[in-house]
Length: 494
Image 1 (spheres, rainbow, N blue to C red):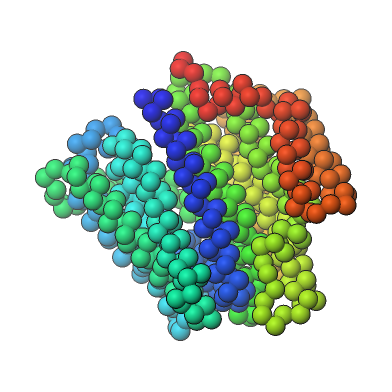
Image 2: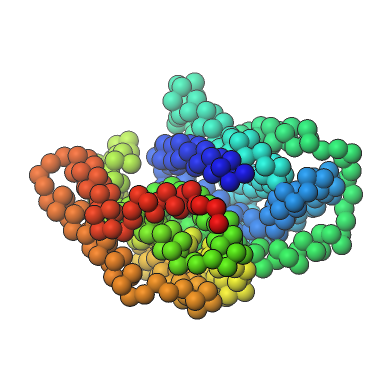
Protein backbone atom coordinates (compact mmCIF):
# COMPACT_ATOMS: atom_id res chain seq x y z
CA UNK A 1 0.00 0.00 0.00
CA UNK A 2 2.78 2.43 0.88
CA UNK A 3 4.59 1.89 -2.42
CA UNK A 4 1.32 2.29 -4.28
CA UNK A 5 0.59 5.57 -2.50
CA UNK A 6 4.07 6.97 -3.11
CA UNK A 7 4.00 6.11 -6.81
CA UNK A 8 0.66 7.80 -7.28
CA UNK A 9 1.54 10.92 -5.29
CA UNK A 10 4.60 11.31 -7.53
CA UNK A 11 2.31 10.83 -10.56
CA UNK A 12 0.00 13.52 -9.12
CA UNK A 13 2.89 15.95 -8.67
CA UNK A 14 4.20 15.23 -12.17
CA UNK A 15 0.84 15.92 -13.82
CA UNK A 16 0.26 19.11 -11.86
CA UNK A 17 3.78 20.41 -12.53
CA UNK A 18 3.23 19.68 -16.22
CA UNK A 19 -0.17 21.36 -16.58
CA UNK A 20 -0.75 24.04 -13.91
CA UNK A 21 2.31 26.24 -14.65
CA UNK A 22 1.42 26.28 -18.37
CA UNK A 23 -2.10 27.41 -17.52
CA UNK A 24 -0.89 30.20 -15.25
CA UNK A 25 2.17 31.37 -17.20
CA UNK A 26 0.88 30.60 -20.69
CA UNK A 27 -2.90 30.89 -21.04
CA UNK A 28 -3.75 33.18 -18.12
CA UNK A 29 -0.83 35.51 -18.86
CA UNK A 30 -1.78 35.80 -22.53
CA UNK A 31 -5.40 36.54 -21.61
CA UNK A 32 -4.32 39.38 -19.33
CA UNK A 33 -2.01 40.78 -22.00
CA UNK A 34 -4.97 40.93 -24.40
CA UNK A 35 -7.55 42.20 -21.90
CA UNK A 36 -5.31 44.84 -20.31
CA UNK A 37 -4.88 45.66 -16.65
CA UNK A 38 -8.28 47.30 -16.16
CA UNK A 39 -10.46 44.53 -17.62
CA UNK A 40 -8.38 41.71 -16.18
CA UNK A 41 -8.15 43.45 -12.81
CA UNK A 42 -11.94 43.62 -12.63
CA UNK A 43 -12.19 39.93 -13.55
CA UNK A 44 -9.57 38.99 -10.93
CA UNK A 45 -11.34 41.01 -8.24
CA UNK A 46 -14.66 39.25 -8.99
CA UNK A 47 -12.96 35.84 -9.12
CA UNK A 48 -11.29 36.39 -5.73
CA UNK A 49 -14.55 37.73 -4.31
CA UNK A 50 -16.38 34.55 -5.34
CA UNK A 51 -13.53 32.45 -3.90
CA UNK A 52 -13.80 34.11 -0.47
CA UNK A 53 -17.10 32.30 0.13
CA UNK A 54 -16.07 28.98 -1.41
CA UNK A 55 -16.11 27.19 1.96
CA UNK A 56 -19.93 27.57 2.02
CA UNK A 57 -20.01 25.05 -0.84
CA UNK A 58 -18.23 22.38 1.18
CA UNK A 59 -18.31 22.90 4.98
CA UNK A 60 -15.96 19.95 5.41
CA UNK A 61 -18.09 17.45 3.47
CA UNK A 62 -15.30 16.57 1.03
CA UNK A 63 -12.79 15.67 3.76
CA UNK A 64 -15.40 13.74 5.76
CA UNK A 65 -16.58 11.79 2.72
CA UNK A 66 -13.08 10.82 1.59
CA UNK A 67 -12.29 9.46 5.04
CA UNK A 68 -15.66 7.65 5.39
CA UNK A 69 -15.42 5.92 1.99
CA UNK A 70 -11.81 4.90 2.65
CA UNK A 71 -12.86 3.30 5.96
CA UNK A 72 -15.75 1.42 4.36
CA UNK A 73 -16.47 1.50 0.58
CA UNK A 74 -20.14 0.71 1.36
CA UNK A 75 -20.43 4.27 2.66
CA UNK A 76 -20.26 5.45 -0.95
CA UNK A 77 -23.67 3.95 -1.75
CA UNK A 78 -24.98 4.84 1.71
CA UNK A 79 -24.06 8.53 1.67
CA UNK A 80 -23.75 9.56 -1.99
CA UNK A 81 -27.38 10.47 -2.69
CA UNK A 82 -27.91 12.38 0.55
CA UNK A 83 -24.62 14.24 0.33
CA UNK A 84 -25.37 15.18 -3.29
CA UNK A 85 -28.64 16.78 -2.21
CA UNK A 86 -26.85 18.61 0.60
CA UNK A 87 -24.28 19.87 -1.91
CA UNK A 88 -27.10 21.21 -4.09
CA UNK A 89 -28.58 23.06 -1.11
CA UNK A 90 -25.15 24.47 -0.23
CA UNK A 91 -24.76 25.58 -3.86
CA UNK A 92 -28.03 27.49 -3.57
CA UNK A 93 -26.93 29.03 -0.25
CA UNK A 94 -23.60 30.05 -1.80
CA UNK A 95 -25.31 31.70 -4.77
CA UNK A 96 -27.62 33.69 -2.48
CA UNK A 97 -24.72 34.83 -0.28
CA UNK A 98 -22.41 36.00 -3.08
CA UNK A 99 -25.20 37.90 -4.84
CA UNK A 100 -26.49 39.54 -1.65
CA UNK A 101 -23.00 40.51 -0.45
CA UNK A 102 -22.00 41.40 -4.02
CA UNK A 103 -25.03 43.71 -4.29
CA UNK A 104 -23.93 45.74 -1.28
CA UNK A 105 -20.31 45.75 -2.56
CA UNK A 106 -21.39 47.27 -5.87
CA UNK A 107 -21.32 44.14 -8.03
CA UNK A 108 -24.97 44.49 -8.97
CA UNK A 109 -25.18 45.54 -12.61
CA UNK A 110 -23.68 45.29 -16.06
CA UNK A 111 -20.43 43.47 -16.72
CA UNK A 112 -19.58 43.01 -13.04
CA UNK A 113 -22.85 41.17 -12.39
CA UNK A 114 -22.26 38.91 -15.41
CA UNK A 115 -18.71 38.17 -14.27
CA UNK A 116 -19.98 37.35 -10.78
CA UNK A 117 -22.57 34.95 -12.23
CA UNK A 118 -19.99 33.01 -14.24
CA UNK A 119 -17.43 33.03 -11.41
CA UNK A 120 -20.06 31.73 -8.99
CA UNK A 121 -21.20 29.00 -11.39
CA UNK A 122 -17.60 27.86 -11.88
CA UNK A 123 -16.99 27.69 -8.13
CA UNK A 124 -20.13 25.54 -7.72
CA UNK A 125 -19.05 23.19 -10.51
CA UNK A 126 -15.55 22.94 -9.03
CA UNK A 127 -16.94 22.07 -5.59
CA UNK A 128 -18.98 19.21 -7.11
CA UNK A 129 -15.91 17.92 -8.95
CA UNK A 130 -13.93 17.90 -5.69
CA UNK A 131 -16.80 16.10 -3.95
CA UNK A 132 -16.84 13.42 -6.65
CA UNK A 133 -13.05 13.15 -6.41
CA UNK A 134 -13.36 12.58 -2.64
CA UNK A 135 -15.29 9.39 -3.43
CA UNK A 136 -12.65 8.31 -5.93
CA UNK A 137 -9.88 9.04 -3.39
CA UNK A 138 -11.76 7.05 -0.75
CA UNK A 139 -11.93 4.08 -3.14
CA UNK A 140 -8.13 4.34 -3.51
CA UNK A 141 -8.42 4.96 -7.25
CA UNK A 142 -5.34 7.15 -7.14
CA UNK A 143 -4.53 7.13 -10.85
CA UNK A 144 -8.02 8.19 -11.89
CA UNK A 145 -7.98 10.92 -9.25
CA UNK A 146 -4.60 12.19 -10.45
CA UNK A 147 -5.92 12.45 -14.01
CA UNK A 148 -9.05 14.26 -12.80
CA UNK A 149 -6.90 16.73 -10.84
CA UNK A 150 -5.68 18.24 -14.13
CA UNK A 151 -8.41 17.15 -16.57
CA UNK A 152 -10.39 20.41 -16.35
CA UNK A 153 -7.24 22.50 -16.90
CA UNK A 154 -6.17 20.40 -19.89
CA UNK A 155 -9.59 20.92 -21.50
CA UNK A 156 -9.52 24.64 -20.71
CA UNK A 157 -6.00 24.89 -22.18
CA UNK A 158 -7.19 23.22 -25.41
CA UNK A 159 -10.20 25.53 -25.68
CA UNK A 160 -8.27 28.71 -24.90
CA UNK A 161 -5.40 27.71 -27.19
CA UNK A 162 -7.89 27.53 -30.06
CA UNK A 163 -9.32 30.92 -29.07
CA UNK A 164 -5.92 32.57 -28.67
CA UNK A 165 -3.74 31.06 -31.37
CA UNK A 166 -5.80 29.21 -34.00
CA UNK A 167 -6.81 32.38 -35.85
CA UNK A 168 -10.45 31.21 -35.85
CA UNK A 169 -11.49 33.82 -33.28
CA UNK A 170 -10.75 37.57 -33.45
CA UNK A 171 -8.44 38.37 -30.54
CA UNK A 172 -9.68 41.93 -30.35
CA UNK A 173 -13.12 40.63 -29.32
CA UNK A 174 -11.77 38.48 -26.47
CA UNK A 175 -13.31 39.34 -23.12
CA UNK A 176 -13.34 37.93 -19.58
CA UNK A 177 -16.75 36.31 -20.17
CA UNK A 178 -15.28 34.12 -22.93
CA UNK A 179 -12.46 33.15 -20.59
CA UNK A 180 -14.87 32.12 -17.85
CA UNK A 181 -17.14 30.27 -20.28
CA UNK A 182 -14.20 28.20 -21.55
CA UNK A 183 -13.53 27.16 -17.95
CA UNK A 184 -17.24 26.41 -17.46
CA UNK A 185 -17.23 23.99 -20.42
CA UNK A 186 -14.09 22.30 -19.07
CA UNK A 187 -15.65 21.94 -15.60
CA UNK A 188 -18.89 20.47 -16.97
CA UNK A 189 -17.05 17.82 -19.04
CA UNK A 190 -14.82 16.97 -16.06
CA UNK A 191 -17.88 16.73 -13.80
CA UNK A 192 -19.52 14.25 -16.19
CA UNK A 193 -16.28 12.23 -16.40
CA UNK A 194 -15.94 12.09 -12.60
CA UNK A 195 -19.62 11.23 -12.13
CA UNK A 196 -19.30 8.34 -14.60
CA UNK A 197 -16.42 6.88 -12.57
CA UNK A 198 -18.26 7.24 -9.26
CA UNK A 199 -21.59 5.80 -10.46
CA UNK A 200 -19.84 2.59 -11.53
CA UNK A 201 -19.20 1.90 -7.85
CA UNK A 202 -22.59 3.01 -6.45
CA UNK A 203 -25.21 0.38 -5.62
CA UNK A 204 -28.85 1.04 -4.72
CA UNK A 205 -28.59 4.81 -5.19
CA UNK A 206 -30.94 6.61 -2.81
CA UNK A 207 -31.50 10.36 -2.48
CA UNK A 208 -32.40 10.86 1.13
CA UNK A 209 -31.02 13.62 3.33
CA UNK A 210 -30.13 12.60 6.87
CA UNK A 211 -30.04 15.94 8.68
CA UNK A 212 -28.73 14.36 11.88
CA UNK A 213 -25.85 12.94 9.85
CA UNK A 214 -25.24 16.34 8.24
CA UNK A 215 -25.29 18.02 11.64
CA UNK A 216 -22.58 15.62 12.85
CA UNK A 217 -20.44 16.40 9.79
CA UNK A 218 -20.76 20.11 10.51
CA UNK A 219 -19.82 19.62 14.16
CA UNK A 220 -16.62 17.83 13.19
CA UNK A 221 -15.70 19.97 10.20
CA UNK A 222 -16.69 23.51 11.25
CA UNK A 223 -13.30 24.42 12.80
CA UNK A 224 -11.50 23.35 9.62
CA UNK A 225 -14.07 25.16 7.44
CA UNK A 226 -13.54 28.33 9.48
CA UNK A 227 -9.78 28.03 9.07
CA UNK A 228 -10.08 27.70 5.28
CA UNK A 229 -12.42 30.71 5.16
CA UNK A 230 -10.14 32.94 7.25
CA UNK A 231 -7.01 31.94 5.30
CA UNK A 232 -8.83 32.58 2.02
CA UNK A 233 -9.72 36.08 3.19
CA UNK A 234 -6.25 37.20 4.21
CA UNK A 235 -4.58 35.50 1.23
CA UNK A 236 -6.88 36.66 -1.58
CA UNK A 237 -8.69 39.82 -0.54
CA UNK A 238 -6.14 42.36 -1.89
CA UNK A 239 -7.44 42.49 -5.51
CA UNK A 240 -11.00 42.91 -4.17
CA UNK A 241 -9.97 45.80 -1.91
CA UNK A 242 -7.91 47.41 -4.68
CA UNK A 243 -10.89 47.32 -7.01
CA UNK A 244 -13.31 48.58 -4.36
CA UNK A 245 -11.17 51.26 -2.66
CA UNK A 246 -9.71 52.82 -5.83
CA UNK A 247 -11.78 54.48 -8.54
CA UNK A 248 -9.51 53.39 -11.41
CA UNK A 249 -11.68 50.76 -13.15
CA UNK A 250 -9.53 47.88 -11.84
CA UNK A 251 -6.14 49.08 -13.13
CA UNK A 252 -4.27 48.63 -9.83
CA UNK A 253 -5.96 45.26 -9.27
CA UNK A 254 -4.65 44.27 -12.71
CA UNK A 255 -1.11 45.40 -11.85
CA UNK A 256 -1.27 43.38 -8.64
CA UNK A 257 -2.57 40.34 -10.54
CA UNK A 258 0.29 40.44 -13.06
CA UNK A 259 2.86 40.40 -10.26
CA UNK A 260 0.80 37.77 -8.40
CA UNK A 261 0.97 35.26 -11.27
CA UNK A 262 4.31 33.65 -10.31
CA UNK A 263 3.21 33.66 -6.66
CA UNK A 264 0.20 31.60 -7.72
CA UNK A 265 2.30 29.20 -9.80
CA UNK A 266 4.77 28.64 -6.95
CA UNK A 267 2.00 28.25 -4.39
CA UNK A 268 0.40 25.45 -6.40
CA UNK A 269 3.64 23.48 -6.12
CA UNK A 270 4.13 24.23 -2.41
CA UNK A 271 0.55 23.22 -1.70
CA UNK A 272 1.09 19.83 -3.33
CA UNK A 273 4.08 19.39 -1.05
CA UNK A 274 1.75 19.96 1.93
CA UNK A 275 -0.54 17.21 0.64
CA UNK A 276 2.33 14.76 1.06
CA UNK A 277 3.30 16.08 4.50
CA UNK A 278 -0.12 15.85 6.17
CA UNK A 279 -0.40 12.03 6.27
CA UNK A 280 3.29 11.75 7.19
CA UNK A 281 2.90 14.14 10.14
CA UNK A 282 -0.33 12.41 11.18
CA UNK A 283 1.32 8.98 11.17
CA UNK A 284 4.35 10.28 13.08
CA UNK A 285 2.15 11.86 15.75
CA UNK A 286 -0.08 8.80 16.03
CA UNK A 287 2.88 6.47 16.51
CA UNK A 288 4.57 8.96 18.90
CA UNK A 289 7.76 9.03 16.86
CA UNK A 290 10.35 11.80 16.91
CA UNK A 291 9.12 14.83 14.95
CA UNK A 292 12.26 16.93 14.84
CA UNK A 293 14.05 15.18 11.97
CA UNK A 294 10.95 15.10 9.75
CA UNK A 295 10.17 18.78 10.48
CA UNK A 296 13.77 19.85 9.82
CA UNK A 297 14.03 17.94 6.56
CA UNK A 298 10.65 19.10 5.23
CA UNK A 299 11.33 22.71 6.25
CA UNK A 300 14.76 22.54 4.60
CA UNK A 301 13.18 21.38 1.34
CA UNK A 302 10.66 24.27 1.46
CA UNK A 303 13.39 26.82 2.30
CA UNK A 304 15.61 25.49 -0.49
CA UNK A 305 12.85 25.70 -3.07
CA UNK A 306 11.13 28.92 -2.02
CA UNK A 307 14.34 30.65 -0.90
CA UNK A 308 16.05 30.29 -4.28
CA UNK A 309 12.88 31.39 -6.10
CA UNK A 310 12.49 34.45 -3.84
CA UNK A 311 16.07 35.70 -4.10
CA UNK A 312 16.35 35.19 -7.85
CA UNK A 313 13.04 36.95 -8.40
CA UNK A 314 14.27 39.91 -6.34
CA UNK A 315 17.46 40.30 -8.39
CA UNK A 316 15.86 39.61 -11.76
CA UNK A 317 12.49 41.24 -11.12
CA UNK A 318 12.69 43.73 -14.01
CA UNK A 319 13.89 41.16 -16.54
CA UNK A 320 11.26 38.59 -15.54
CA UNK A 321 8.43 41.10 -15.86
CA UNK A 322 9.72 42.23 -19.28
CA UNK A 323 9.92 38.61 -20.41
CA UNK A 324 6.35 37.90 -19.29
CA UNK A 325 4.65 41.06 -20.55
CA UNK A 326 5.19 42.61 -23.98
CA UNK A 327 4.52 46.20 -25.06
CA UNK A 328 0.90 46.94 -25.85
CA UNK A 329 -0.20 48.20 -29.25
CA UNK A 330 0.84 51.82 -29.87
CA UNK A 331 2.58 51.96 -26.47
CA UNK A 332 5.76 54.05 -26.35
CA UNK A 333 8.95 52.59 -24.94
CA UNK A 334 8.89 55.01 -22.00
CA UNK A 335 5.29 54.09 -21.16
CA UNK A 336 6.10 50.39 -21.44
CA UNK A 337 9.14 50.62 -19.16
CA UNK A 338 7.11 52.65 -16.68
CA UNK A 339 4.40 49.97 -16.64
CA UNK A 340 6.99 47.20 -16.23
CA UNK A 341 8.52 49.20 -13.37
CA UNK A 342 5.16 49.15 -11.58
CA UNK A 343 4.95 45.38 -11.92
CA UNK A 344 8.57 45.00 -10.78
CA UNK A 345 7.88 47.04 -7.62
CA UNK A 346 5.04 44.71 -6.58
CA UNK A 347 6.58 41.43 -7.74
CA UNK A 348 9.40 40.91 -5.16
CA UNK A 349 7.07 41.80 -2.29
CA UNK A 350 4.61 39.12 -3.38
CA UNK A 351 7.39 36.57 -3.80
CA UNK A 352 8.39 37.36 -0.21
CA UNK A 353 4.79 36.52 0.71
CA UNK A 354 5.15 33.29 -1.26
CA UNK A 355 8.22 32.35 0.79
CA UNK A 356 6.43 32.97 4.10
CA UNK A 357 3.28 31.16 2.95
CA UNK A 358 5.37 28.17 1.86
CA UNK A 359 6.78 27.82 5.38
CA UNK A 360 3.24 27.55 6.76
CA UNK A 361 2.84 24.38 4.71
CA UNK A 362 5.22 22.80 7.21
CA UNK A 363 4.23 24.23 10.61
CA UNK A 364 0.58 24.87 9.72
CA UNK A 365 0.23 21.36 8.30
CA UNK A 366 1.88 19.96 11.42
CA UNK A 367 -0.60 21.79 13.67
CA UNK A 368 -3.48 20.61 11.48
CA UNK A 369 -2.30 16.99 11.77
CA UNK A 370 -2.17 17.48 15.55
CA UNK A 371 -5.75 18.80 15.62
CA UNK A 372 -4.72 22.25 16.91
CA UNK A 373 -7.40 24.00 14.86
CA UNK A 374 -8.48 26.41 17.61
CA UNK A 375 -5.00 27.92 17.76
CA UNK A 376 -4.73 28.01 13.95
CA UNK A 377 -8.09 29.78 13.70
CA UNK A 378 -6.97 32.43 16.18
CA UNK A 379 -3.83 33.06 14.11
CA UNK A 380 -5.88 33.20 10.89
CA UNK A 381 -8.40 35.61 12.49
CA UNK A 382 -5.52 37.87 13.52
CA UNK A 383 -4.27 37.71 9.92
CA UNK A 384 -7.67 38.82 8.58
CA UNK A 385 -7.89 41.76 11.01
CA UNK A 386 -4.33 42.93 10.29
CA UNK A 387 -4.84 42.54 6.55
CA UNK A 388 -8.04 44.57 6.32
CA UNK A 389 -6.90 47.33 8.68
CA UNK A 390 -3.54 47.77 6.95
CA UNK A 391 -5.06 47.71 3.48
CA UNK A 392 -7.62 50.36 4.41
CA UNK A 393 -4.69 52.58 5.38
CA UNK A 394 -2.12 51.84 2.66
CA UNK A 395 -4.15 51.11 -0.50
CA UNK A 396 -5.53 54.67 -0.98
CA UNK A 397 -1.99 56.06 -0.75
CA UNK A 398 0.35 53.35 -2.07
CA UNK A 399 -2.09 51.36 -4.23
CA UNK A 400 -0.83 47.95 -5.50
CA UNK A 401 2.55 48.32 -3.77
CA UNK A 402 0.76 48.99 -0.48
CA UNK A 403 -1.41 45.89 -0.92
CA UNK A 404 1.70 43.80 -1.63
CA UNK A 405 3.40 45.17 1.51
CA UNK A 406 0.32 44.22 3.51
CA UNK A 407 0.37 40.71 2.06
CA UNK A 408 4.04 40.31 2.99
CA UNK A 409 3.43 41.62 6.52
CA UNK A 410 0.45 39.35 7.17
CA UNK A 411 2.10 36.23 5.75
CA UNK A 412 5.23 36.92 7.82
CA UNK A 413 3.27 37.37 11.05
CA UNK A 414 1.06 34.30 10.55
CA UNK A 415 4.03 32.12 9.54
CA UNK A 416 6.00 33.17 12.64
CA UNK A 417 3.01 32.62 14.96
CA UNK A 418 2.43 29.15 13.52
CA UNK A 419 6.07 28.27 14.14
CA UNK A 420 5.83 29.47 17.75
CA UNK A 421 2.64 27.46 18.29
CA UNK A 422 4.17 24.30 16.79
CA UNK A 423 7.27 24.74 18.94
CA UNK A 424 5.24 25.20 22.14
CA UNK A 425 2.49 22.61 21.58
CA UNK A 426 4.64 19.86 20.06
CA UNK A 427 7.86 20.62 21.96
CA UNK A 428 9.93 21.05 18.80
CA UNK A 429 13.63 21.38 19.48
CA UNK A 430 15.18 23.01 16.40
CA UNK A 431 17.76 25.10 18.22
CA UNK A 432 19.75 28.21 17.34
CA UNK A 433 22.36 26.24 15.42
CA UNK A 434 19.70 24.98 13.04
CA UNK A 435 18.43 28.50 12.31
CA UNK A 436 22.01 29.70 11.80
CA UNK A 437 22.31 27.03 9.12
CA UNK A 438 19.21 28.44 7.40
CA UNK A 439 20.65 31.99 7.53
CA UNK A 440 23.96 30.79 6.04
CA UNK A 441 22.11 29.14 3.14
CA UNK A 442 20.01 32.26 2.42
CA UNK A 443 23.12 34.48 2.61
CA UNK A 444 25.03 32.14 0.27
CA UNK A 445 22.25 32.14 -2.33
CA UNK A 446 21.99 35.94 -2.08
CA UNK A 447 25.74 36.37 -2.60
CA UNK A 448 25.86 33.93 -5.53
CA UNK A 449 22.95 35.63 -7.29
CA UNK A 450 24.41 39.10 -6.69
CA UNK A 451 27.82 38.12 -8.11
CA UNK A 452 26.35 36.44 -11.19
CA UNK A 453 24.14 39.49 -11.79
CA UNK A 454 27.30 41.61 -12.08
CA UNK A 455 28.60 39.56 -15.01
CA UNK A 456 28.39 41.21 -18.42
CA UNK A 457 26.36 38.44 -20.04
CA UNK A 458 22.83 37.92 -21.34
CA UNK A 459 20.48 37.96 -18.34
CA UNK A 460 18.88 34.61 -19.21
CA UNK A 461 22.28 32.91 -19.33
CA UNK A 462 23.15 34.55 -16.01
CA UNK A 463 19.82 33.45 -14.57
CA UNK A 464 20.47 29.82 -15.56
CA UNK A 465 24.02 29.94 -14.16
CA UNK A 466 22.81 31.46 -10.87
CA UNK A 467 20.02 28.91 -10.57
CA UNK A 468 22.38 25.97 -11.17
CA UNK A 469 24.97 27.24 -8.67
CA UNK A 470 22.26 27.99 -6.10
CA UNK A 471 20.93 24.44 -6.43
CA UNK A 472 24.45 23.23 -5.76
CA UNK A 473 24.55 25.50 -2.69
CA UNK A 474 21.73 23.43 -1.17
CA UNK A 475 24.16 20.55 -0.79
CA UNK A 476 27.34 22.63 -0.42
CA UNK A 477 25.93 24.36 2.68
CA UNK A 478 24.59 21.00 3.84
CA UNK A 479 21.06 22.32 4.04
CA UNK A 480 20.00 19.00 2.51
CA UNK A 481 21.56 15.71 1.61
CA UNK A 482 20.36 13.23 -0.96
CA UNK A 483 19.89 10.74 1.85
CA UNK A 484 17.48 13.09 3.64
CA UNK A 485 15.48 13.71 0.49
CA UNK A 486 15.06 9.98 -0.13
CA UNK A 487 14.03 9.52 3.52
CA UNK A 488 11.39 12.23 3.15
CA UNK A 489 9.85 10.97 -0.10
CA UNK A 490 10.21 7.27 0.67
CA UNK A 491 9.90 6.95 4.45
CA UNK A 492 10.86 3.63 5.95
CA UNK A 493 8.26 1.50 7.64
CA UNK A 494 8.42 1.80 11.39
